[in-house]
Length: 120
Image (cartoon, rainbow, N blue to C red; front, side, top):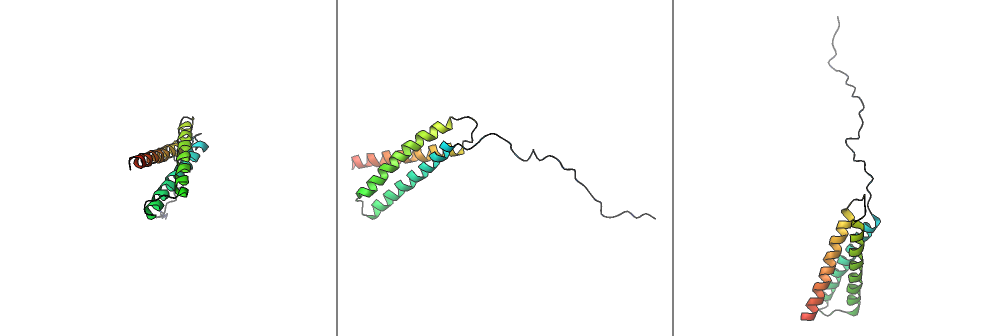
């Protein structure tokens, strides 16, 4: 009298997990990360400068102008570093792209503020 068990033991053979992971030699470039950080600083400081100037009734203090000037320098430097890091080999392009986009937005915003100041 042999009874068959209702529970069967399934032993799954250990298979390599290489299919689930992406092995690569790519890295995040330090220049690209620096470009993204400079872009964040530039955009944030420009937005704060405009908001604080608006709260003062449109009269920009010297400290706000200095902050905008430093942000413009940061954005130009960040844009150059981002473009340089984009041409490196074997990298992930996330941070260089973010840096280029943020710094280009900051440069365009500074140019817009200058043109708006000349017109008004």
